[in-house]
Image 1 (cartoon, rainbow over the protein chains, first blue to last red):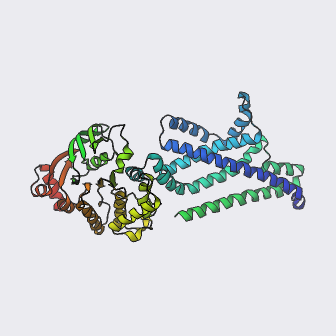
Image 2: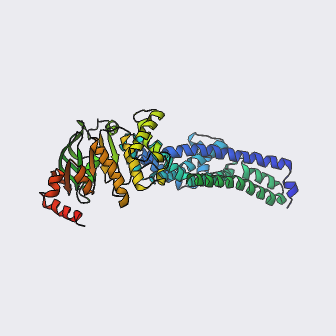
Image 3: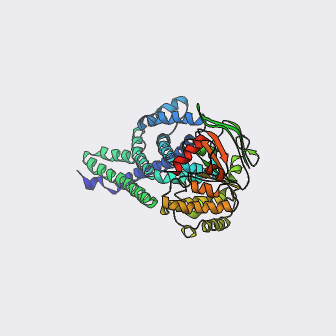
Amino acid sequence: MDFAGAYSIDHLKFLLEGFGLTLYMAVIAIICSFIIGAVIAIIRYAKVPVISQILAVIVEIIRNLPLLLLIFFTYLALPDIGIKFNPIPAAIIALTIFEAAMLSEIIRSGLNSIDKGQIEAARSSGLNYIQTLWHIILPQALRRMVPPIVSQFISLLKDTSLAVVVSVPELLHSGQIIYGQKQAYLVPILLLIVMMYFVVNYALSILSRRLEVKNT
Amino acid sequence: MIVFSQVNKFYGDFQVLKDINLTINKGEVVVVIGPSGSGKSTLLRCINHLESISNGTLTVNEVSVSDKKTDINKLRKEIGMVFQHFHLYPHKTVLQNITLAPMKVLGQSDEEAKKIAMKYLEKVGIAEKANALPSQLSGGQQQRVAIARGLAMNPEIMLFDEPTSALDPEMIGEVLDVMKALAHEGMTMVVVTHEMGFAREVADRIVFMDQGQILEEAIPAEFYAEPKEERAKLFLSRILNH
């Protein structure tokens, strides 16, 4: 094991670039999937006719597929019907679609957990459905949803490593390139990668716990 | 003010309301009593369209409640409702619970809504709890906040759906006192309750329901002295001699 050689300045810079890309993909996918997931959840919660049934089917299909398959599909299969993406956008799109489906289920169950009496009280005071959703249901549901949503964000961040299969130069991919040069680099580099993922994800769990405490 | 005419309501094959004819006038306090499952809560909830009627006509201020063209939110501004389980918003303070609808529905300013809210909190006797969360209040206090929340919209009608049934016995009095005061001020009230003392003292009229039908309508003195219907006699003897 060659720690000194593995942790050279050039290698570290290279790894950090990879990690930067990992975080970039995760942040974009988190923002987009949260918005899409919330919209899907609200449409299904409000039982908007036809659209909510269609969304239910799509969500079920996506949730039950491996993410890896979605990434392959977006990058390799879509070009056959004329939709072509570079590896990074392809990976981000696949991640977003997958996580949106997962998040929509979390958000929907959070909305469903709010007592129907809350809706009746708000509606009987003259608030319309949207106002009731916005002022009464969503704020209460969001508080309950924080822990499962954050843990979904953590899986998303970890799942960005799957983009390695379509040669996105994210953290794991950068690591592979470095330890590909020399067997002695393998353990030191993998250890460093473990640390990087752990630090960010652990920070997210702490944040989630803080938010939880604040809400009780 | 509220007119039920030949109203029926079904849940599937089960008929919850049968041929309901009932007129409630402005300023009247009508108490609806009857055994559980008799349809009294459903009757009340039809008035502000939390439940829809299957057929017949139901009008509030000459506006049809079941008509699809009716702006139900506009109608609900005039009808306050108090629930058995309070249904205060747990994530909002007492004051915010009361000011939400006046600000969002009536378009009151924050300042104006707060002033009105405080007025009603004083009226129900818990102005000092304005900044507390509902979870910090006793059941009786929560129900009084719920009443203040209803009143803050300045409604013409107040509906009460078993407002004291979820309360500890010692807290029932404080809620009933607020309701009595309201009745004396001339509020139009429809109250579903098992509180016979309240009914006898405050009601202008008692409506006795069983199995979805109105079996008897009478002024309290007559009703309690000599109910006409056998079913009402039985109900009264059970509820008064327990």
